[in-house]
Picture 1 (cartoon, one colour):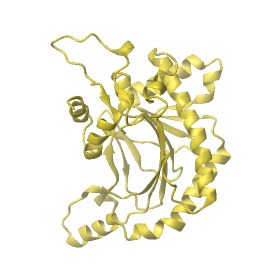
Picture 2: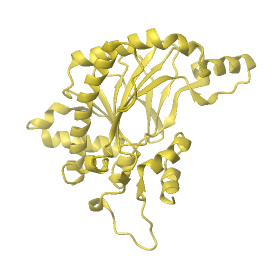
Picture 3: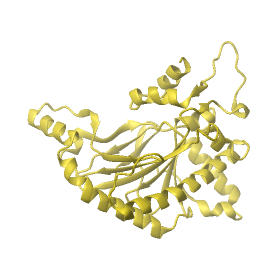
Length: 308
């Protein structure tokens, strides 16, 4: 069993209907799918991978050796307790946001990532338009829902992670199981070192590396907007003994002031006996709950924000 691999270029040809159906299946049954022929030049993707690996080696690698996860894991091994580290991830990560000062001293890193970010944001918007069409919504509905006027635009963040080789991978998570909070997530994963898994029918399934594909997954807010037609799916990263796994995840998320609710066209009639499955809420309120409950089941988060 493997997540769907979809040729995005076929949206523009005779196979458009079949491609739309494949994307609908990816959103409804999997919550994850891989896009190939997505329009982002391979030369740019290769450059992104190179500058991120070089940046980690020159600016982050030594620091990770003295990081909290390394110290906690060493202490655990010395204690011989037989337990597993459950509240920490074997991950080095930085986040690049619209309004952040980017951390690299390399102009090539900054310029390459800005170019990639621009093209990837356009791809995210195309994917959202496909979701609109598949859900029977007006073109641009999801994009508009993630924005809250000119002063409160949706933001597009990037998370550059590395998962260094771990001497005791059975004792720590690369990244604990969770769903993503926001809208559409686009991942350029390592093509050599595996580790990403999704939960499907109570089984953990590997997301097999496919060179220069873009992995798409839907966040909690897409589940809400679609009134449950599309699901956000729990996923995790395993620690591995060999290889430094690189992961570049990008998030198309709402303004913190955006109000999120199921699209009216997708809402079922509500009776006094059956409450609505998804509440109406402000994204900033949801993020306050998510920050404390990220690695817990999502349903209590919806309930908590609905009562705010």
